[in-house]
Amino acid sequence: MKLTQLSIFLENKPGALSAPCRLLADAGINILTFALADTQNFGILRVVVPDSEPAKQLLEQNGYVVRVTEVVAIEVPDQPGGLAALLECVEAAGVNVEYVYAFTAKQDGKGLMLFRFNQPDAAVQALLAARVNVVGTIELFKRLGS
Image 1 (cartoon, helix red, strand yellow):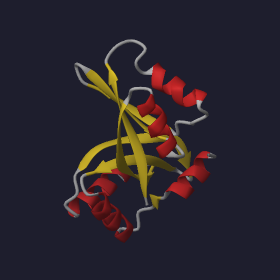
Image 2: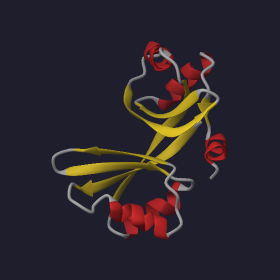
Image 3: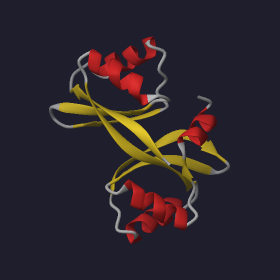
């Protein structure tokens, strides 16, 4: 139920974002979704790809610092209060949301969001108990046509 995400540390300068994206593209590795965060001195490019290990190896062989983390893909009703209800569910389980970003694809009136939790297993348990659809890797790739 958890997905693997790669966090790639980049210098905060022009061209730093396109270089790893081109590297992955030239290797035929599709980026399914991504988020970019920055600080004053560096950026963090977070990506989900169909097979993270070859992507990680490629990036590291080309001098990038890459961290592997687990994220959880969750269906969120695309309506007022959909996100609030989901957040209340994990908060009631004592789980903290560290960050979140969304996929652009919607299906059946629901969006998909990726959550990084401080306790991903506890979050998944709480969400499943609340009948929230936690999307696994195979289902995600089917939805995205990967």
